[in-house]
Picture 1: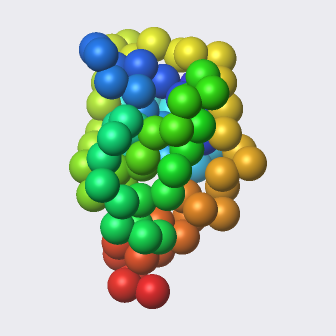
Picture 2: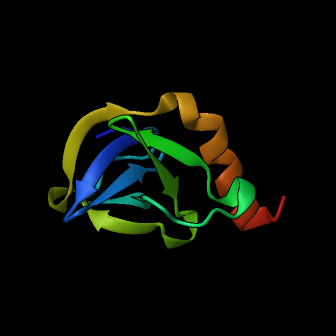
Picture 3: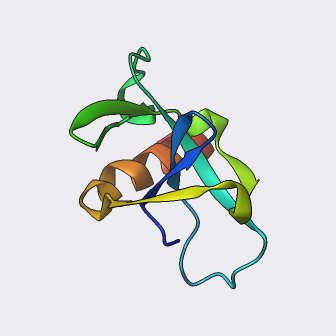
Length: 94
């Protein structure tokens, strides 16, 4: 499981936010990807999952046990800049 991988947690898709440079532990930082969520500009970028647009709900990111996540095999490294902007906006307001 790597940064920008799409994972499934129960019935929800999520995006691994945590850097690959951080030593692996039982927990990993994940933000949910939700269909039909109203967007708040840069705070909630649209991320395609299996060809369907989902909204990154960065304010709900949380640490989740790795063994509770299912790897989908998808990675959205192409959305890296939008994800980093969302994290920066959440923390710094810019």
